Image (cartoon, rainbow, N blue to C red; front, side):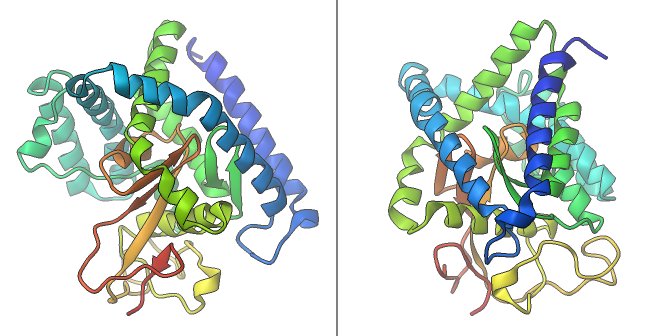
Length: 318
């Protein structure tokens, strides 16, 4: 096993063990929401993550934004975005989306060469579309349900499926293989602070708009992941209070045997998490409005005409 694996493996083992422990005690901590049987413990972890953000991450991100010129910050963001396209391309291939995977490889080649190792996003200027895929979405694409909602220490909102996907993301993220450890850790820290700095201006939305921030984050996160699994076209649900991101029939999403996508205009407030899910994290800064903490970023899709937001997170019916 390469040298990089030692510290990362310890972190992964700690987080996975914590998640498994929560699952085993979930029966005695159930609440009224079937998607969140571990709510009491999840709320404790949520408060812990929020405290870490307020004490350490948010001040560091503020200093970064104030001291580093915007042109350099943009270059750093583009650099990590180019690296993350490796994960996106691989997952598009695993989902059988060969044209999209070829498109992603093209982005990497163009930005790495003409864009000087990705510092400049030349591919976007040339009209090469950027996608957003990760291993959690790939597992969902092939029919694996998301399972119970979990709030992971330091990483934030997740699920059983997305936690497994996060491990796959780490092992395929090129930065994980940088040696020596010091250089790799510097890159990881820089990326984290870079993304957090781009979300500073929107951090007040959650505080002012949500009556219960925890519930807002949970429901929006689950809705966003469902939306991503179905590539923005989730099927209609019979019970809006029991949203499930697991495909309703067998076979890959979007193929015969799955429910047709909803036709109604949709306005979605989405939440993404897991610093260690590179394919998602780097896309948040370009989506607005956004809300950030060490464990989350709330973002809104482009709002189509006649769309509306209901209860601060989702409306997929007119």
